[in-house]
Image (cartoon, rainbow, N blue to C red; front, side):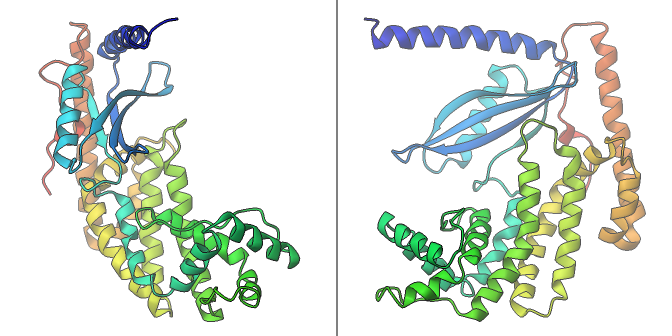
Length: 352
């Protein structure tokens, strides 16, 4: 029988061979490479970081490969940057990176933080959360809940799902599923003496109000999460749609919704200021939109300053074009793409 050490050695040899092939391929690749990271937690509660590269080949096909999987100790914010830099240098792609996107950790201030405004609705949906937690706590309670739903002729297509404080979309899923079982909870109150927190009609109405608004974020997040097709060209439009929706919610008659929206807008503005240029350029490169997409949305976002912002991004497009033209000219003289003249897109001259 083959020993564990032999199998381990064979796996590492295969890895090194495939790694060398990929490095060689990336050196010849004419496009830039995007990097994403994801933090995974093992059943021993240890943190691991997966690094994935994304690129478009000469046939305009999108590819993505997990290229490194590494243990990350607690308090890992500084470690992440060190691991990433070691990887970029080891693979010789530090001059070919277009963007680096990390997942929702302390070092990342991404769009998902807009939804921290959900904190203000915790009290409003507290009884629904407690009800879902109670009836999903054990298999026997879950079975009793489903029996009650069937007695009321309510289809049990989805199981109750408890929300998670670190994942806003779980709040949407919890509410959307619980609402379909709205009539089951008071029915069970008559049969279960330990079940004490039945949501009121007012609380259910509030849940419907909140859930209807969160659906916009959920649908957009699902769109952004596509891995088999490019999504960068859709970011700008969808994020602008979010801003428009937030403005509309501010004039809602529901005070709780207005409080939630006000908190979301503060997060949105912080996020927008940091990434709107990259998103806008990606949208411009979509031949369906071009610069006209900015001419439509920027007046809504910037008012009288819209024309200045449009010209700023137009100039960035020309700078980016010049970068690629210089790379193309250099490529005719040398087979190396990533020379000392390389830089990432975010290094282009842009002054806030």
